[in-house]
Each structure stands twice: as structure tokens, then as C-alpha cells.
Image (cartoon, rainbow, N blue to C red; front, side, top):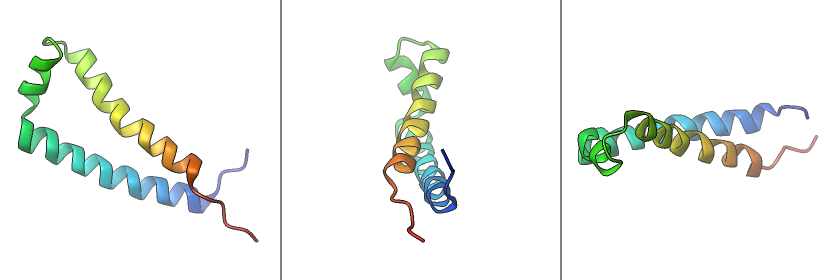
Length: 70
């Protein structure tokens, strides 16, 4: 599988924007302690879910971005 620069570029732009939005939403509006309390006080579960909320949509953007035709 050949990596496309265009697909990687769009995925990285999405990653940065989505990560910034989640950081604002989690640290600014809901406070991390509230989210941690929602998951029963488990740091590993909370951190894993938050990381997956960033990685999975980024991979989906990469997969569904159309390749440029030459």
C-alpha cells in the first residue's frame, strides 16, 4: 500500500484540529476530573478512551480521503 501525501496531509490537519477541539472541550468545559469520575476514577481507561477518540477518526479520515489521480 502506497502512502499518499495528500491523504496524510488532510489526516494530519484533521488530527490537529480534532485534538485541539477535544482539549478545549475536556479541559475547558467539562474538566478532566468530571470525566475521570464518570469512568469510575480509572486513569488508564479514561486516557485510553480519549486517545482512541483522537486516533480512530483520524484513521477514518485517511481511509475515506480520495487519492488524487495522475
